[in-house]
Image (tube, rainbow, N blue to C red; front, side, top):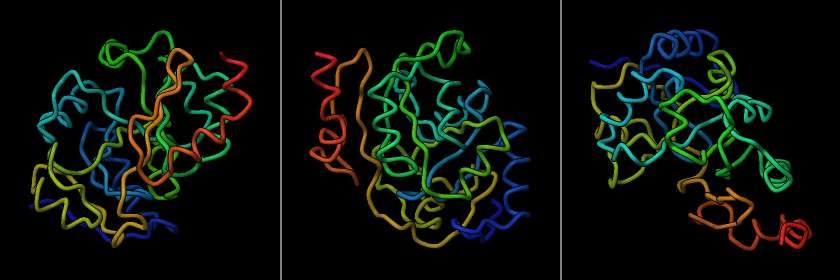
Length: 215
């Protein structure tokens, strides 16, 4: 049976963080809270771990996985951030906005083939501490089977993923019952891909002035 540990998202217990870190470092899979939904976290630089996430979610191989950061500067490991990126990051991070940006050079082949990367700095100290201690970046996709209901409690996730997960971290219901919003700025073109917690007008308003410069 999968291991389930209780923890606080805001004040993470040291032993729970250490347990999650040890699992992620060896290529394992953890379900943990974020500030939006429960997510599957794993090492994105480990191709076997990434493959395991795809199989666990029954997700199409050509569909990139969203990634979570430990700190804003860890974005430089994944993307080539420009003015639009940093304006959005400064306005909404840490928080529920995923930014899709052009990939950085010299990514590992299994990540480079995704093209533009969707990344986010979550407002959940627990998840961010795990990210910081495992290289700065985590896979951060919702902890459900693709196409099924997204989980706001650890037990909703367990009902879908079961014992295929190495560790579940139970921090109670997530603060928000909606996914992050997703905005693509790849190639300098702004496109709202998903309107979640952050509204379309709020996103576009944050870019006021810069959009005129880019056009």
